[in-house]
Each structure stands twice: as C-alpha cells, then as structure tokens.
Amino acid sequence: MRLSTILSALASCAVVSGCPFSNITTRGLYPRAQNPVYDIYDFPNGTWVEGLAVRCNGEILAGLLSSPQLVQIGPCPGCPDSSLSANVVFEPSGATSVSSITEFKDDVFAVVVGNFSIPQLASIAGSYSIWEVDMNYNPARSRIITHIPPAAWLNGITTLDSQHVLACDSTLGVVYRVDVSNGTYTQVANDTLMSPPPGVYPPLGINGIKVRNSNLYFTNSIGQSVNVMPIDSQGYPTGAATTIASGFATNDFAIDKNGDLFVTTDPQNSLIQVTPSTGSYVTVAGSANSTALEGPTAARFGRGSTDKSVIYLSTDGGVVAPVNGVVQGGKIKAVCVDTEA
View 1: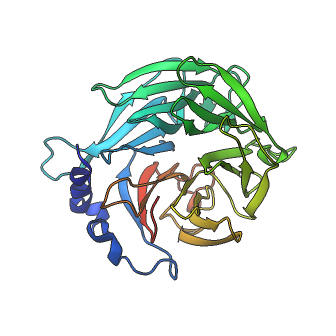
View 2: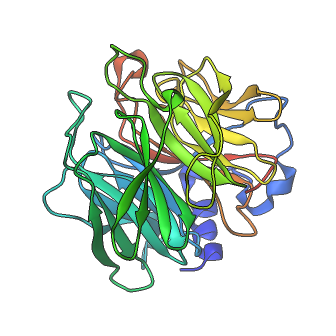
View 3: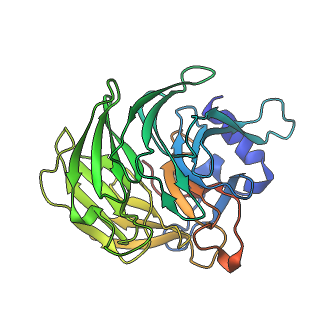
C-alpha cells in the first residue's frame, strides 16, 4: 500500500481524530508548548514493542521484545472502517524476542534477534543473531546473517553503508560492525561512555545508535546520557566519545535534518529534543506521570510528503515503571514536530 493510503486510514481512524497529518504545516505550537501524542495502533496487554522502522511505502515495522515477531502495521484490506491491522512478517524459531531494526538497502532490513526475559529484565548472553528481512517480496523473505556468540545483550542497530551495519552490546559496552553479505563481524568501538555504570541492574549501557556525518551518536540508558563519537568509514573511532547531554532517561532516538536528536526516555514517558551544538534539550511530548507516552522505546520519522514531520514512536506500555501501577499494552504513537529527517 502507498503512503497516501496509510495516511488516509490514519485520518479516518477514531483514535487519531484531530491529528493534523493531512496538513502538518499548521500544527503551530512546537516548541513553545508540548505536542499532543496520537495513538496509531494498540497491541494487546503484555506486548512490549521495542524496535521500529518506517518502510518507503509508509507502513510501519515493529519488533516485539515480548515475542519473537516482526510485525507490519498498515491498512486493513477489506475493512469498512479503514482501520489498521498488524500482521507478522517474520517469526524466527528458537528465540523469544525481536528488537531493533535498520534498513540497509531499499526495503531490506537487518533485525536483532535473541532471548530476553521481561519479568527479570534479563538478557540471555550468547543467544543473539542478526537476520535479514527482505520486504520486496510477499511474503517477506528472511535469512540469518550471523550469530554473535560473544554478545551479552545485543541491542541497538544502525546502518553504516549498504554492506555493513553497526550493532551495540548494552552490557559489554561495545559496537560490532557486521558485513550483511558474508556475516563476518568485528568489534570496532569500546568506550567508557558505552558501558553501564558498575554495580547496577539491569546492566544497560549503550542502547540507541545512529550514524550521521562521520559521527556515531549513542545513548547510555543507565548512564542517562546522549553521546557522540567520531568514526571513519569502517566504523572505527577517530577520537574519544564525548557527552552531549545528560540527566534524563535515554533509550532510542531519531535525528532530524539539522542534527537534533529526538530521544525516547523510557521509563520517564517523554520525548526529548537534544541540540548537539549547544547541549540544550527540551521536552517535546509526554511527562513522567502521564500515560500518553508510557514507556517510549524507539523513534522514527515518517518518510512521505505528508508525514515527514511526524515522529512515530513505539512503547512497552510502562512495563519498567507503570504509571499508577497499571501496565498498558505496547503501542505505536505519533507526534507532530516542526522539523523533518
């Protein structure tokens, strides 16, 4: 389905009534007031949505930490109310979780797969692999790219170039470069700003990662920081990592055309804009005690002419720190902003 189709479905769906998707330029208040958060799709209770990608046709891919599934969210064929449906496009055997996603070729994605215990918030070391999911086919075609046995908690993933992705280990505080063609992998980065602080649980250090203009941007979740490291074309550091901003929860993020980072703050339930040139940051949407954005995990900009200023967000429903003690099902949300990727 084309982007215009999914946006038409969003506009007609009751849960997003009033969202200015069809006329983004009139949204107005950002950043002088917090932006409203719109529901796009609700998963059942007990669903933790961890990874997120937006396809070139506007449909959304979501990786579920609570089950080994990559789900596509798009228009529901034949539904009279133009509602959205979620369909499993990839379900690897022998795993419990699908997490981060990155597109390395047109409509071809690298996906992190492994075993994770949500009740214990515990990663199972040695269980991780990276798979290719090719959405150019219907049904999607998948193949394993590589196992990474040394990984203790493989988490964020990003594209370096059309042949290589970078994947980070949140517990070991390292970054691997993976050749998507032959499956070889090499540790390319290891910095103290990537490691979790000693003696903390869960040992969740480096989490979200993105490459932009010869820089590797990354968050450290338990360290509550947003950081940057200069790298070369192979992903190796050309200088030490430095902290851009700190003092708030950090998970994944999206980057706009100006280089600002829009950071999800699970479990602080907000989206924060960080400006690397100054280190300043401002809350765009959500708040610690609000259920509007409970447990935000990943962020991605829309890719079409009518949603390029929309940031899509995934949530875990507040599993880590439920507001008022109530855990929701994971969701896909949307926030309109005054910028684009």
